[in-house]
Length: 346
Image (tube, rainbow, N blue to C red; front, side, top):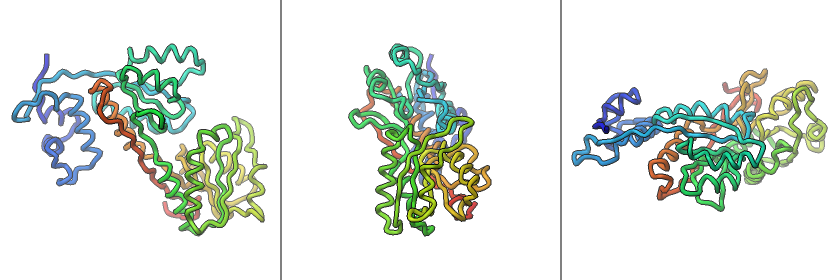
């Protein structure tokens, strides 16, 4: 049986006032200063509860049947801090529209994983694919027959798909401008050897961003191995950049996993941060503010990315994967300034 839906029903689901919900649904939210995030929550829940389906002539109520489901998210590995960071935001975003949420890793056995992929649509209403989990085979298998999917932190230029990504160009520009404003001249950009191909896009953006600034006299690139548990950081590839003729003022770390090993290695050599060299990260990491010198870094807009992904995927589910538009959303990261770059803002 359906039930008549009113504004107060949506308000009760969200824990908001009926007046606020009414303002959003009547396109008056901006006039009253209601946050964009709140507006998106209201609209998402209204869509999920069927407010916009078969609206009566007066636009006051509609007869609906709620269709709860479960959203799956495939990730390449659970070792990526980004997965731990964004998962709570995604859970909250989907819970707000009445959907369950489950995360699982890609099976290293490709044949077994291929068999699993073909049966996912039986268990999940839609799917989020993160990073390298969204390879060509997985994307083509899932997108066949209009199955609702959204790619997060991965874009496939050859296919018309919904994607939600950090804006690498904006992030590289933000970090380059910040270091330039602080007066640094010589930069060293380091990335993880094992993920060099995956990092190529952000490395190219950093190269372009630093070239645009007349303030940098030298910009060098180096790849290093990420040490395993108990192993020491291989500092041999970086030592030449700490003395003339390549005296580096600041190190930009592309991968958050390299920050702690680099930090420890510099401390062991009595290299002071930021007095002798500044260190910044292109990614946020767990515990960066707990170091003796907190790390300046870029933080992905986790809440905004989660809301966008949830709303896009729910729209695809409502349209049975046949939505007219495919959205490619790029969101700029936030610069978190700490003392590792020589700026003592807290």
